[in-house]
Image 1 (cartoon, rainbow over the protein chains, first blue to last red):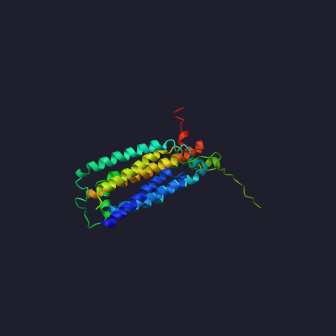
Image 2 (tube, rainbow over the protein chains, first blue to last red):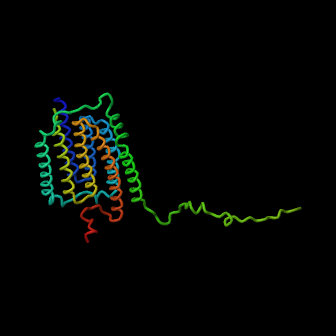
Image 3 (cartoon, chains in turn orange, purple):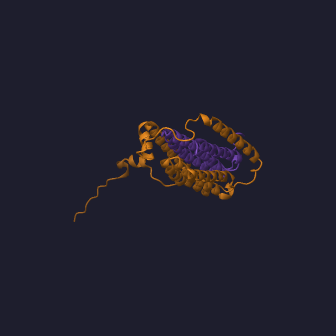
Length: 201
Length: 101
């Protein structure tokens, strides 16, 4: 048990430090890399909570796709415009104040109410341990939550359509096919049949 | 033995860091989007902690959907950002006051 606690405390301090790095680094590339590290650390913490499938999905989808997209956009923009400069210290005490209030409120609530959590110290109930986490998740996803699953797929389709249509740039003077005109061509207007008299000798 | 409160406290701290980041950052929309990702991560942490301590898989299902929506949100947000940079040559939060003027 002690080993698990050591792992938890080490990883949660790494998670807090990297989250602070996300908001404190001046260079957004460093922020993005710090966010990647915090995703990987929280995937490790999710493994402690026996959410193996979601931990792997977090690394694959977030680190592999979303953060790469972030880094791609950061590097596509002109970096000198993007680097944060001053105007940072003026608002920082206020932000710290707000942050401390939020942490204070949440932690007070969590620890005051903690004796009312029946499951607070150890898990209650049992999951089916004969099958893995992925099987359990898939079974629930494709039976009870099938419609939500379909809607999630539709949202992803919507995201594809929206981001392509937002960033698509039409340039003037580009030579391209217009398929409808090609299909609707009347052959009699294009082709003239000419009778050639064959020569007779 | 680690209790539920430890995980909830960690998630609360990460959430507050995300909120602070949104307030501090007045220069850069990309950092704003990253802070939203941090907030969603903290929420997912709560779902997974409750899912483990209740031994109920439903919490993980919700994390699955939050991940989906967050990915879509990041893609659309970055697309809007690229269009904005193309039109205004800047991603400064302070300069986006067209609606106010």
